[in-house]
Length: 457
Image (cartoon, rainbow, N blue to C red; front, side, top):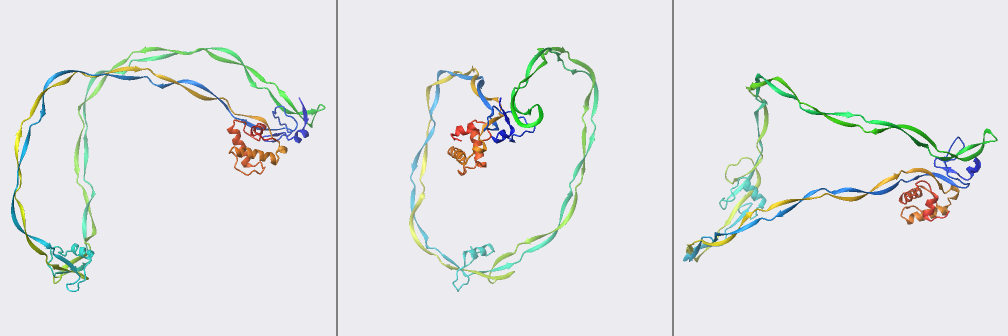
């Protein structure tokens, strides 16, 4: 074991995760530290192992086997051609007729006046028809004018039900009689009696504290004053013998039968059920006044010369008709249309061999046993822990060393910052991501990370 003065220890940057090593009653476990080395607390990830397990992959089931039906043959008279009818055609006869046909249709024009020749738009013509102008049957040379009549309103009193009519219910109680009956008050049951377990006492030696090494202050020449010397010492493991009580025979149970219990009681039975008498209560009404529109404002069209109500809007439609032209022609038309004559054709039957069901199909159930498969499970065998690991000292963190780390991490797609030789936040996060990705101890810039990255320092 080597002893180092505190000043020497500080000179070689012996660091810990929580700060520099100091001499104020601080005990730190560091493995075989050497001058010029630096250590930090890091997290060693948990370890896992896999094992296989047999699990049910398919439950037991049934397979259905169909046993086909059995058939027999026989003779049967069947209809092969239904009764029908045959139609015979009786030709049509014709005759010659004369007819007056339209060669030029009557032309109807709508104008704003009888003489000015200004046409009426389709919208005004449609409004005139809607407003009461007899557009379809008005005589040629007739005019209609549009008049406006304002909306009309009226007030009236309305009656409403302020409280609905309802019924009062009067209950007439039921009537009962009493009879004696033997009834089950407690069913037969079973009582489970517990037989207590028996125990025995055993002793066991358990580890209380494992062996460890730590730094301790050294006394100088037997005095208690601090001479600045720290010693790395081994603390032996501590064990403790304990006595514990364990089960010798586990607890068991036995079942005791308890018979049913019956009781004779007086039972009340319904002689006449309860009834309800309904007493009607009349509804109550109230009134309110509303003002409603009797008629909307209207646009009406009145024939010129007739009496009109309202105000003339200035719109007018007049009908101008040019008579149609006709021509008399001769044509051959049907005198008697063609007809048909129906002749009956009887049905035709034939004896055929048919197959009939002798024994219906049936289903046979065949049991299919359950199936198992093997699965792989991943379980943790050791949890993550915090240990001391050798790290790159601050004095060794030159810009060239940090650039090498940054280049290696960037090549692996973990670092996105500049290659500036500064051990900043982005570089630290990339180192942590690399440690997690490769199962390395998570913490500072450890020697195993530098070796894994291939960076010399």
